[in-house]
Image 1 (cartoon, rainbow, N blue to C red):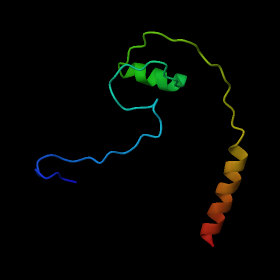
Image 2 (cartoon, rainbow, N blue to C red; image 1 turned 180 degrees about the horizontal axis):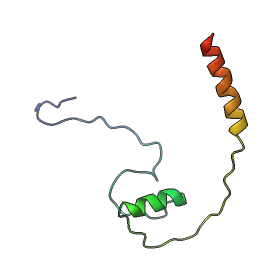
Image 3 (cartoon, rainbow, N blue to C red; image 1 turned 30 degrees about the vertical axis):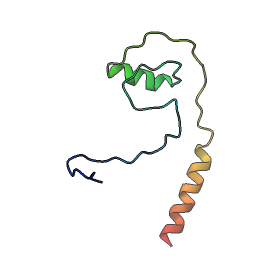
Image 4 (cartoon, one colour; image 1 turned 90 degrees about the vertical axis):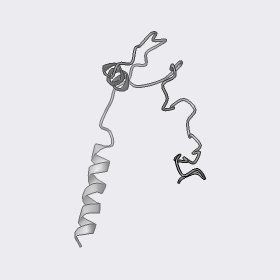
Length: 80
């Protein structure tokens, strides 16, 4: 939407759902992210100054059979 001056673009304010994740260039403190995101951001040039602690977890495909089952059922229903 254009403002009254017709030269500036007026952007309506959208409330953020999370106060931690914000898209700005300020320093991030006490920021929680996965190792993949941290690696990606450091390739983009973000400097990691301090790591407070690291969480270790295992990733598993425990929902794979469930997702594949309902995906095939949904595709079968579309074919009818």
